[in-house]
Amino acid sequence: MNYEIREMLPSDEVRVLEIFQQGIDGGIATFETEAPNREVWNTEFFNDCRWILENENNEVVGWAALKPVSKRECFKGVAEVSIYFDNQYQGKGLGSVLLKKMILDSEYHGFWTLQSNIFPENEASIKFHQKNGFRTVGVRKKVGKLNGEWKDLVMLEKRSETVGFD
Image (cartoon, rainbow, N blue to C red; front, side, top):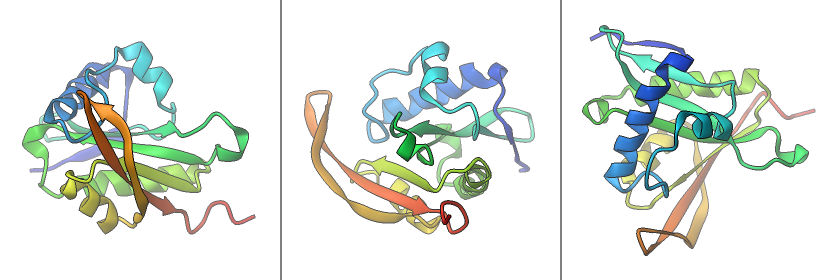
């Protein structure tokens, strides 16, 4: 099967939120308990660095986007990665292509650090990020509750080798 990466369009938002809801329903991808509406989602993510992976039938099967980690000027080059796939397309090796595109685009837009916070039980996601150049920074213990249960987060980051060396 052939796949194509392209920039996310406003017309993709419904499908993006459907895929996000699948991730939420899986219980090991996010603290969110339901997908936000389109307006809220758009305010949470940067307008740049939004990518879609489509199959040969032009169906959106995955997406990646960046969120700011802080509103402070000193952290303007640090972003949190969100990458989600339709359940039927997980584990097929498609994520690396999408994440590599995201990394290149993030550097083009001046980001020097990408980070990801992952539940420890989401071992596939941790391995996926490590395979793509992220390093484990540490584990944040009982950082928040999901459905009444305290959850830890493994914090990973990827520091650019080209941006932020002035």
